[in-house]
Length: 126
Image 1: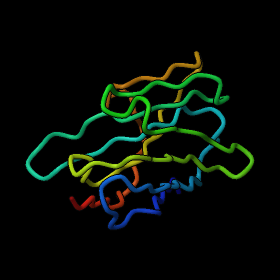
Image 2 (image 1 turned 120 degrees about the horizontal axis):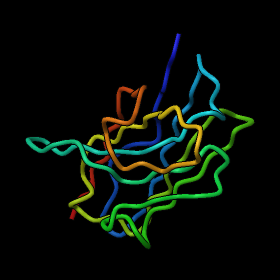
Image 3 (image 1 turned 90 degrees about the vertical axis):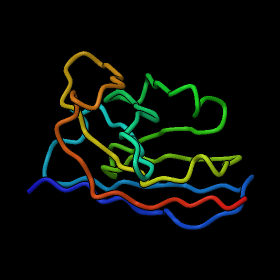
């Protein structure tokens, strides 16, 4: 049974930091690109960051560049999103997702992802 379980969300003041984790099970983690997406109320889900199977390549949305860092530990079947200098507009439900990939891609496209977690709420107060 495939599972992606996010954790680490919460309430933080603007300028603060959070580290999200996503624990994967039920599939061969090292064969999947992993991504983070977010969704604000009333808006479409959007790409935040992605990391290739080996961790050698990463891709970020413009809103995340310079503030967020995606990483993974294939031995622990876990992907992380370190978020620094958080802003109120970062408030959203954050989802991790897995994309079966043979070419080391870091796709920003939601439709490429095969498995999704349930999400974790991040709220940034001003």
